[in-house]
Length: 182
Image (cartoon, rainbow, N blue to C red; front, side, top):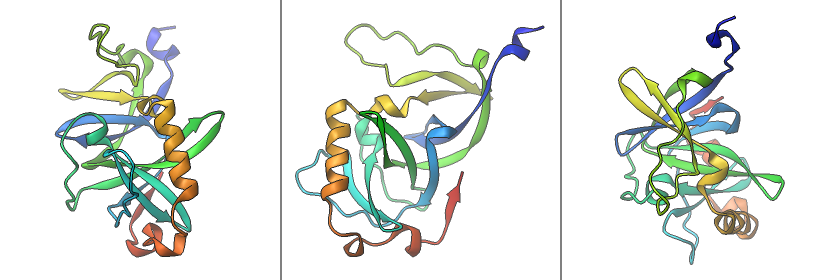
């Protein structure tokens, strides 16, 4: 039996940040929404854009570009919110990840994914699960459970529980109409 036949194939949702291609394991993705108004929560870090109302629930939204040290995500027709499930303290939390655009769902086998590059001891890359390739482009595969620190995840959970009543926040599920359920 060949190595190819023994490899597990996984699906990944690809998206862009600043012209680079990133991917999340499809099992952590709930849906993709068009950009909807985001209500800013005072005294939260800059990467925390605020919350949206998703079918009656306040969902915190993280600007992935700011989290990765890039400029703030510009609101365009392609900007979207990827709704993901993050495991924190043994329970799952739903959050939105703001991205420049969503590309497609791709399939990669384990042997098509390389280890994350070693960047020395001062650069933290444990949130990168691996590097894949699509055509001539690299795809940075992220581990959604490691992008935010424990403290940041705790803050997201608090924001979600303490945010304004759902009816005061514009409803992402109702106002925009288009969602991509995965």
